Amino acid sequence: MTIHRNIKLTVAILTIIFSSPVFGQTPSKFYDQAKIELFHPDFKKIIDPLIKIELLAEGFQWTEGPVWVQKGNYLLFSDTRLNTIYKWSSKNGVEKFIQPAGYQGTEIYSEEPGTNGLVINKEGYLVACDHGNRQIVQIDLNKRKFTPLSTHWKQLRFNSPNDICQHDHGDYFFTDPPYGLPNREVDTINREIISNGVYRLDSFGNAIQIISNLTRPNGIALSTKQDKVYVSISDHKHPFIMEYSLNNKLEVGKPEVFVDFKLKFPSEPMAADGIKVHPDGYVFAAAGSGIIILNDKGDVIGRIKLGIATANCNFGGDGYLYITASDKLLRVPLLKL
Image (cartoon, rainbow, N blue to C red; front, top):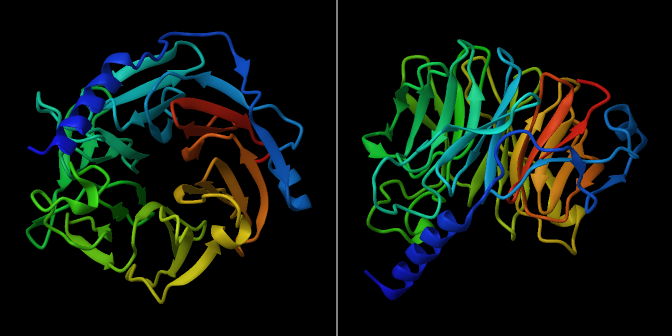
């Protein structure tokens, strides 16, 4: 084991020891470092530019994958580094929901051994991108029972599934960068698939690699008509959201750059992360230090600037946009949802 690896393991252990999210219900407070930026009048249709951002909880390590559970009216979200899925509700605040959520071993596996992207599927189960076990897994919310849906492509084990969405036909689309591997891109021991792929998982459990030439595919979402798939790239040199058309067989067409954040924000580091699509077609994208809102043509209409690294967001059934950013969980009310 190298000195560099020992240092990384030590940091990971200390991270877990000194992380201290506050559990239970806490008084509501505003996140004063945030500001809302208006780039186009259409932004006012969905968010009040004068509204305050609410801080719900903090003290985690790297919050990710928020998803609303309609049956129960609560939010679930991952901490990839603490290997935990947390639950937040207006009644009880923050609670541990599942731990360990990903890697089950007793030793330190990697810097991000937990789950990442989460989705509630058509049957009401939680489906998670599991970094540590390198799989797509279905979780019964009541029994906390884990059922692997896919672990391999062409007999090769996935890198570390990162984010996921489900088509109305039942097929899943997910990204598979190396972030959950012990040494990420340079992992020559565990890594079996060289490309950082994007996959479709059909209803028979078959994984089909549909995109293989992106540097760091991360967030993924379907358009409102489900005839396009958006894929974000968490690459500071090429911070794009790519757009691919989908035919009736759910095969992808030629790639197009939906937005280049480097052109829109040339003076800021803007690696793109999680993305969600509003029912009216607006794209909410975590990039850099906030959530950027675009219309369906890729034009920036507004931004929720948080001033901290921002990972993901999702729409709640209670009319709020929930945001995972660095060690925090935040929310902002929407005018339309």
